[in-house]
Each structure stands twice: as structure tokens, then as C-alpha cells.
Image 1 (cartoon, rainbow, N blue to C red):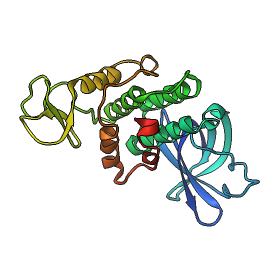
Image 2 (image 1 turned 180 degrees about the vertical axis):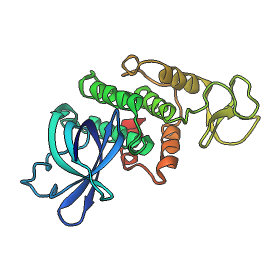
Image 3 (image 1 turned 90 degrees about the vertical axis):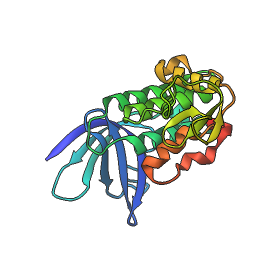
Length: 239
């Protein structure tokens, strides 16, 4: 039995000598992992399956552990994202975050919509995406995965946040009087929370008050169980 899906390629993993596991995020079936036979051969119809593409795929379902990819038609190649190194790193980061937070074969319409909008803005937006864009994306993705970072009230005393603040790993911002952690400013916390609540297009290119660049990334990495590869881009791109 075969089924068709439309999805964005968010992950790839080599399998054996010639095959590859491709992971797509679809709105109706969530994260979908499929085996693309011979995908590592240059003449394979799946050789052009690059991260970030949106494609219509045909999947053969069967008794095997991973479904098999039968056909792939690229609908959006994101060529503009591959012409600029910073935007390429940004695209890899966005795909990795979504791959870490999405669930296998569980509908993820909000996360899928966020992914599509982020890639659209990253490809066609003018100038640098800026740190507010990435922090807002990470905070939104965490929220859609049921892991909303606490950026309004202290998780310990339950009072509205006021300076001085610290970061509590896996939770969010807290009063320094309540616990220990990495120092934060209320201005940074307020800006990230505002970005989380606003449409991504409204925060593209917006500056961010001084603050840590990877605390939300660490929350995502905790779900994945390992560092994100896109972390190598560092604050020069993501911060």
C-alpha cells in the first residue's frame, strides 16, 4: 500500500553503503522517517533531496520497521537559502530544532506551519534574520511541543519577573533571590517573550538586548539528548 504526503525534509542519515534515511515533517503525519534506497548514488532520483526542501513524497507502507520512499517530487527547493552561508546555517538550525521537537507519526500542524514560515522569511527576508528571529522561533517551537519556557513569572515564587534574573536550565527565567543560574536581564526576557507571542515576520531583523544566545537551544538539545550540529554556527549567525 502506498500513500502520498507533502513535507519538509528536516533530517538525513546515511544507511549502509548506498541508502539514506530521510526525515520529513508533515502537517498530518508529523515526523516521518523513510528509507530512500540508493539515495547516495549520484543518478538516484532521491540524490537531490537536500535539507529544507518541500516535496511531495510517495511512501510504500509495509511490515518493515521503516517505510520505503517510492517517489519524490520537489515543490520548493529553497535555492536562495543555499547561496548564502549564514542563511544556510540558519536553515540547518531551524530544521534541526524541528526534528528534535516533533513526534514520529503524530500530527504537527502548528510546528509545520512555523517551519514553513521560518524558511520562507529566511530565504526572502531582507538583511540578516537577527537574534530575535531565532530566539522567537526557538521559543515558539518549544511552546508548540508543550515545553513553553517560563518568561513571565518566576517558576519558584510565582511572582511576575523583575530584575535581577537568572536562567534555570530546562525551565526559564527566575529571580536571582530564588535560585542560582546564568545572569539574565529583564529586557532580554521581555524581548524574547514578545517575540514568542508575535508573528515571526514581525521580528525578522529586529535587534535583541544583550543576553545569552543558547539557553533555548539547550532546552531543545535536552529533548534530543545531544548537541545540535548547527551549534557550530555559534553566535556569529544565531546570536
